Length: 209
Image (cartoon, helix red, strand yellow):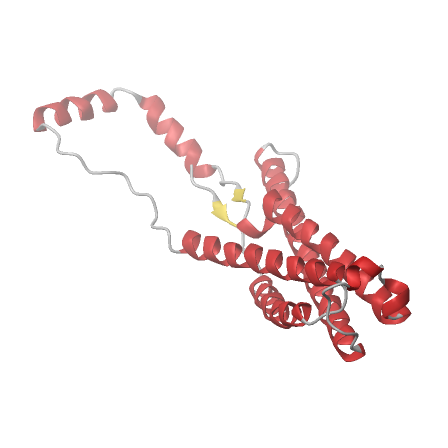
């Protein structure tokens, strides 16, 4: 029995695209940032977010364009087909089974954004983005000398408060967008589970329709 498709809010797509746009200045600023730790951390965060969101959009597009499964037509011997129809007419249990399946409402399928793998990925991205944001807040507030070790300054770009503030702001926006996306997906997953539980309760007569 095929499952019903639970509606997915369109703003999940908008949040995903917005986060990808935020990653562009994040990667650009990480190249000229101060401190090797902040450079590599910010670049890694931006790259991981882009990889996840690009993969998510591609899988969503492929899933939406996937053709519906239809039974394959085979050439059948007319005599064998007639014998098959006569045997089916003598089996009333098949009609009863199909009637029961028609009366039973199918479950809602868990949409792709609400799958455990996507939720776990968003949680991981939120954590590392928060870590990068805290590092940038420390560098911006305490200054170059107090927030970094001497080894981190070797090969690093010169201190520029405008770049540090810009990178901190970009990471803050990405952290908010990821947190919002994660909250929407968790809430959507909960609603799908509750909808299936209510459907099962109606089928078993535990609650009134």
